[in-house]
Length: 193
Image (tube, rainbow, N blue to C red; front, top):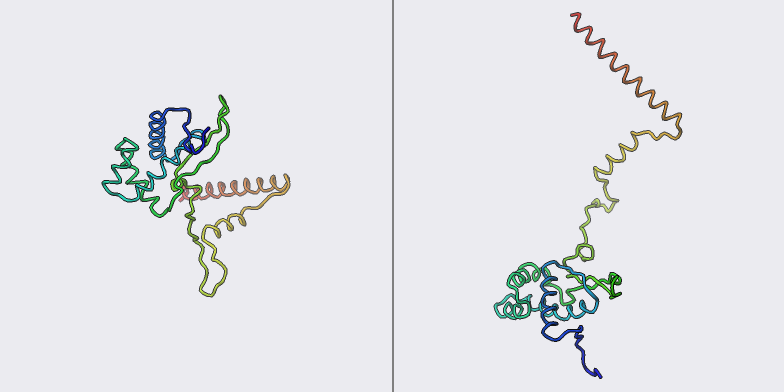
């Protein structure tokens, strides 16, 4: 019976499990997202989130504590320099698990685990509005790009039938022939002088 046994052993002995979770945590901190099975991702979440909380306070003690789990100086440095300032205002829940389907070989449920603050799609930071209102509370002003686009649309005629298209093509060819004949007449007038 497994009463009170809350640790998912993941089919491994304790040393193998700790080494695997340490390596996965290093990969997650380095690449900001990794693909793995749901069971491993849930175990990794419980392993890495206390380390991220510890990284919020940049002291020698917390660095040594995190290093005892990760065993990689470069990853610890990246965690304290890049990741910790971004998650400083978050109270918890630093990771997100997104299920991606089932693995083809053994039908294991796969997922992507990622650091929440490093995903541009899901972040809460919204782009600031660039439209402005007048002081009297009127409607927004049109930007110059919108006005320019409307002018271009108004200038270009829309042909509804093939006859209109052919007529427009003939007009443009006639206009170009007239322009070329005017140029040749000007050139001949200059030669005579």
